[in-house]
Amino acid sequence: MRKHKKIDSWFLSRYGMNLYRGCSHNCSYCDGRSEGYNVNGEFGNDVVVKINAIDVLRHELDTRRKRKQLKKGYIMVGGGVGDSYQPIEKKYKMPHKTLLLLSEKEFPVHILTKSTLVKRDVAIIEKINEKNKCIVSFSFSSTNEKISSIFEPNVPSPNQRLETLQFFKDRGISCGMFLLPVIPFITDVRDVMERTIQDAKDVGIDFIIFGGMTLKEGIQKQYFLNVLKQHYPKLIAEYNLIYKKSRWGNAISEYNDKLHKIFNILMKYYKIPKRIPLEFFKNFISGNDLVVVLLEHIDYLLKLEGKKSTFGYVAYQISQKDLPLENMLYKLNTIKGVGKITEKIIREILTTKTSKYYEQLSKL
Ligand code: SF4
Image (cartoon, rainbow, N blue to C red; front, side, top):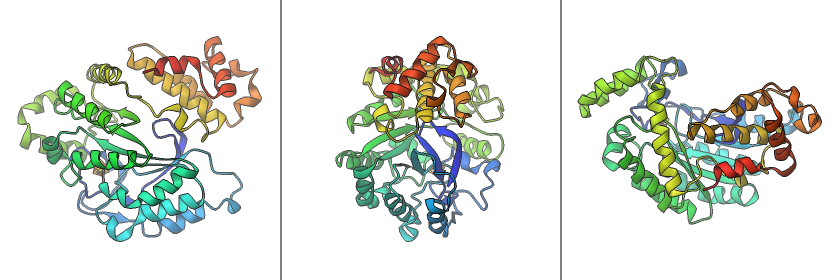
């Protein structure tokens, strides 16, 4: 398992894992093909299977050999440098074995995939969900079939993914949509985005997490621009205007601000949570992590409204502390960035597991 430096407030996880390296879904925008990830072979064709992953995981989850307990939170299955439900998965059944183990050890689990193969694991997912919780999320760049066939050539179609979400919703499993990356000038246009959000609403999605596309200099950018040139040659100039070789491949902030504004308007109209709802995690994470997550969610929601916020900064400062905040209730103002209002919110979260300010901001 990969241990995150702090709780991840998008996935509510402390640990994640890549069961494979490389991904035969071969999405043109995938940043897994960037040089920085050192994935060997030809991305999209060659997939490394971590055949000993289950033994390693069993060892890592064995609390008898640990001096420190594992951190509480969801275990994230998926994401990173390869979808956990690869087509070759029919043979290796890696996530299936992983889920069996996580069920045995009684961890809550969050699965993120683009593959309908996850349906095969419905029985074990239901079992985890009964005892703890299991969230099944799918990622989309849009629900447009034609666009998906260009940029996500080996991925089950958006309709198949929506049907799979419905399949899990019908069985009482909470489901999320990761609407990311939206592809500039193609799936970020208002009509396409609105259709996608509407489709998610129709299946009863529990939340949508949103994000733009990064294009890191090097293989990722070259590969994507080649596909773009074949299908949307006129857009190359527009891309040059918004991707200015930033270190992480981000588009310029003017573009991102505009994009998030449209998303926010649509989400308000369709009344869908923009972060994982509090009731899905408040009993599964520590007091410190709950404070970190809620402050980060507040920070995000304020920034979506175009407001300034220092809550994210405070969240980071808290995430660096080992001492439980409950033990420093009267010294909270010694934490960098904590003023009177933040102090009050932190105390409220620690005593009630929520915050009125947070509730007001996330109200639909
Ligand atoms: S499914 Fe995810 S990991 Fe796989 S190619 Fe697409 S974006 Fe990359």
